[in-house]
Length: 186
Ligand code: FES
Image 1 (spheres, helix red, strand yellow):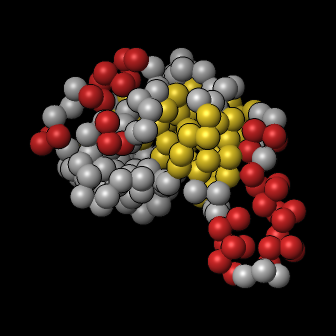
Image 2: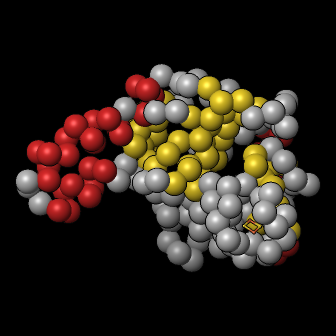
Image 3: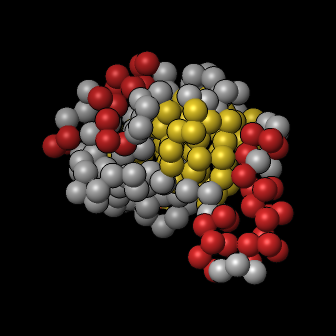
């Protein structure tokens, strides 16, 4: 499985590297298990294909890696202390979308930085602009988060829409920590 990584230091350079396929072994295991599970029942097969595990340890502070999950790009971003502080300093009332859009929390959860993450260092987002579905560029834009090249939507370092036509914050997918350095998305 290929993943892309970028750094805060080189915001204009998109550096595509391969990190060991084992880091996202959930996909391979799910594919191998398909013929067996398919004979059991549909709900079990859907469940098996709906998650992917990812090893966080190669990702350095200031970097982002993109993992494919259910055919969608998921941004796995290791935030710097500065990025976390900037996100936490934003008053909720100033946000265009004040809902957390976090699949791990109730729909009514608010878009505080705390409710956009599980651990402050790790920002996990579905990398699809909520305007018309382009893939935003990381570490770009006036808020240091994301810039969507299609129509100029800008998101902050918590993935919250701050300017432009996108109506909602970038979605936080369902995920959990299996260990301090491993997450399961889905
Ligand atoms: S699709 Fe992102 S701003 Fe339009």
